[in-house]
Length: 544
Image (cartoon, rainbow, N blue to C red; front, side):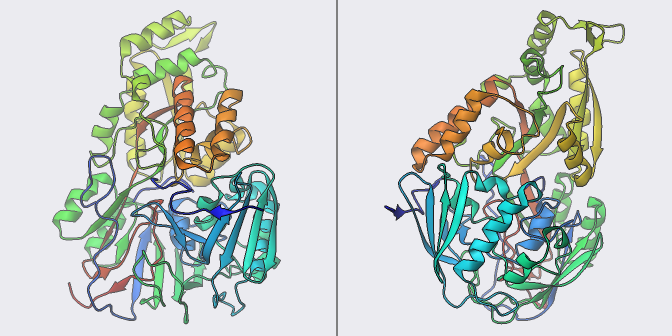
């Protein structure tokens, strides 16, 4: 096998789910504050309480959890082969000290770091990597990570510290995928436990800086420092053992209660800070940390298997009836960028497709008239006895979602379209996605790689939008086959154009993750995916 380095420039030199996590943001949505300040002499010891919005649901790293809050926890338990630096978006060593790829991106070789052990004392070996990847593939749709293994053939343990991952078709996005929590490496005892029995985390054995101390569903997850940890990436700020003794992720669904628990001193850090609370939190002297989320933007995603929205004229009309700027300005603030494409600006390969989505109610009405949709007595259109009424599936875990959708409801009603809002928690949302019982899905997905388009839209992936488009599918697979960053970004631009011109999705706003902390907290940071990074560098000072 001929090989070449696959790292800083070969991948995506410029650079799983709904979440939210300020201080100062630049015009393109990139945060200027991604980590809390760290003083010269960290304090060793102490307990950190971190308030999150949702129960993790599953502490199995490759399982399906509740999005950001799950990944906040599991990131502390497992390490990854590679690390994506949030400042540069480049891939760097972690459990693997080096990696190479063959010319057609079908084989990847990783050399593992010496001296790494799992929390049960067993050593990290190539066999453990092989077992982890084989386990994910065997789990199939039960795993959130299986989409990273398209075309998977095998993983070979070349020797104790060298592992080769082979695909039958090119998979240029795979090295980036190995930096994710979902592909975190687990020990033999975890693999020996049936996949469905790992959700509580008791069976999860990783190489991470913390271990599970306790988990009480819908209440809290407590992690304890792991003695002897010494292989964190450099970017989070500390490569040795964690400074903190324990970290407790406390489930507090109500945003106002989370904010109150921070300002009253009951907790150290809160996630899911709502835009409406940002100014008051900052004015009270509590530091905020934010980062613009890469990945696919928040917006209207169409289930094209449903009769009404299978018509592109209806989808285009909805695009022109949607006033994205009004929604952003009303429900959020200018920290959150108005959507210009299916991809957020912070994502590798982003291309501006905003010309397809100009707000124009006259054009929206004209499109609906031409398609045969006539206004009824109540102003809602109908065609052949069918009312132009659509169901929107959405998650209630982010406060601005409801405000955004209620405003969207008003906007669409002005051109004769009725929408019913079908909200719920993450499991309810996922079940409706699976069943297809919706016309429009309000969602996003954070990932610092343009391959997020394939996992969202490919007919070979989960395809909850039921899209069957050979042109789009060919482009999605083409970007996966390109190991050259420039060539791949060109294909990603073509994909965004195809999605825009077919109106498979209407971008409304990009996401910004915001967390807030006590002035005594140091070293907390957000990773390249805008989710919580490792907490090895986090510590608490005695005073402000």
